[in-house]
Amino acid sequence: MRKSIVSGLSAALIALFTTSAAAQDGGQVYEVEEVVVEGRRLDEAANLFVEQVADPAGNRGTARWDDGVCVGAANFTPEVAQYLVDRVSDLVRELGLTAHEPPCHPSILIMGTTDGAGFARELVSRRPKLFIVGGSGMDQGRAALNRFQSGEAPVRWWHVSVPVDDETGQIAVRLPNMYSSRPTVENPFGRLMEEAHAPQVRRNFASRLRQPLRDVMKRSYVIVDVDRLDGVTLEQLADYIAFVSLAQVDPEADLSRFDSILNLFVPERRSTGLSPWDLAYLEGLYTVRQGYVGQHAQASALSRAILEAYTAGTEDR
Image: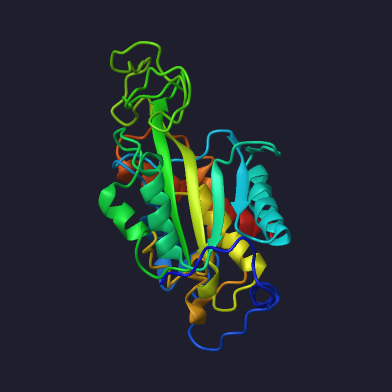
């Protein structure tokens, strides 16, 4: 029988959260030093990092939060929930966005459980349209959703994003019941169009390299299986959650050559927190100009932004 979902963490789990991670002796983590990573030039390494991490929907550019973010946490003790909310909100502000204060409706929701896969299945079965909205390129699709509901990952996540007109901010894909005047389960973004015809996208420039669309994050669900955290600290967990909730991250990314928080659950590669690579990636994501045609062009632009952010960071140290 599946374990019941807890409303708070036991004393043992609190102890787990406050225990420092043991030092790891085995395995070398490749850290960037000026221009070389394991024999690669820095720009090649940046391309590799983006190739592994970025997981955009719909073969377009990577999505990001546009402005305000509201972070919520459920099924944790108040102290743990507040710490997670505060850490993610702090990083939101560092990226130049607004972190709304309660009361607000969470756009990033962090949930604790003792059965990650079972909790994900229950959540999806109750509110399926929150995960597969029905608009083109707004999520990773049903195969990815099936993976979200299976496996033994300590932390799993699901993002919903939406392409919008770069000038007006108006949604650029048709949604079921999209001319509803109020938010509903079928149309969670409220009044998006007042007419029933297909969305019209304005183009006031001529370019083969850019398109008049940008992809905006709308929801992030993060599920934490507290029985599978294997001694990570609360600080490490909060940094990991912050990264995967603010960027579309491939759950199967192989970052064994990099010092990254995404290696948190690989004991021999475990990072103590957000690394310079992670911070450069997020800074690049939130500064690069969106609207490049195709996933590869956007990835190249993001790689250049990461390179600039990382180089600036090393010069400051």
